[in-house]
Amino acid sequence: MTLPMKPRRSVLYVPGDKEHALEKAKTLPTDSIIIDLEDSVAPANKELARKQAAAIVREGGFGTREVVIRVNPLETPWGMVDLHAAIAVAPDAILIPKVSQPGDILGTAKVVKAADGNPRTRLWAMIETPMGIINAREIAACAPDQDNRLACFVLGTNDLLKESRARSSNRRFAVVPWLAMTLVAARAYGLDVIDGVYNDFRDDSGFRAECEHGRTLGMDGKTLIHPSQVIPCNEVFSPTDEEIDWAKKIIRAFEEPENARKGVITVEGRMVERLHLVMAKRVAAIADSIAARSRVEEPWF
Ligand code: COA
Ligand code: MG
Image 1 (tube, rainbow, N blue to C red):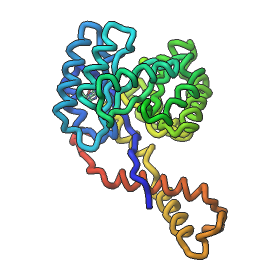
Image 2: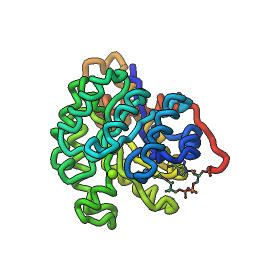
Image 3: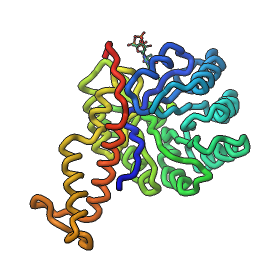
Image 4: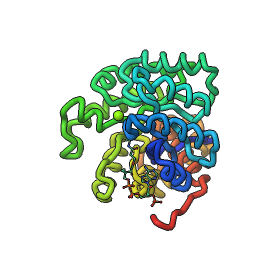
């Protein structure tokens, strides 16, 4: 038996004030959409973006795509209004920017509870400040308590570069330790982690290389800024045919009656332990849910 999995390979930001882009997102083969009210929306458009985001989420039509609203930080003049508007339309998740300590999650979860938020709405946390990296473990530790609704970390690499004064050159050499720290903190508490964006959206080979890099680090997917990034990202973060075949072989081998009580077996000359069975079941579950999705083709891709 495999568990149903939610692939989060491609997670596309769409500025909340761009109505056309919001409509277009409904036709793109992206796993998740983040409707942004924060960094990509100028102060003059904050109200418009909030209204449009609420209207489009209420209206629906996103199919299997997960819909997330990124609010402004609660200490800004827009944050609390954004949060209440988001809670009212019950998206799959609300993404909280610049999470630096567990209190940022606990406080938001309390507001969601007090506003009688739909139980389906989860909280996602942007990890994008030096303090957020230092406290990643304590923040992730909020996850096991279901009342806190915490489901996913999203790396904000542009903010991290700004705050740290590091450079992104050399295969992100400077930020890799922070990405890896965040990843293990998240995994210790069962959270998904989505990599940061690749700004140069016309550079296909650079983008693909950074997707591979993120996948090697263990990321579940990547945040995206442009429709042209969706398909290559899905390709890199999907299990390959070889990985799926190998996973199925491991599952079948452990199902053999003679292996039912064994901890370690040999499959095609390679040692396979029960921990590989757990990994194989995850690969098979992700592959199943990807296969179950109807693929939306866009002629301009
Ligand atoms: N989501 C959905 N559709 C998008 C999109 C997005 N993020 N970015 C662009 N599109 C659409 C455009 O509306 C356009 O649609 P059309 O061909 O039907 O008219 C098409 O994709 C091609 O867009 P293009 O002209 O190549 O890009 P642009 O110059 O309009 O915009 C950006 C470039 C970077 C400004 C834009 O992609 C964007 O706003 N990205 C998101 C930025 C963001 O949210 N940042 C915050 C997190 S880091
Ligand atoms: Mg940011």
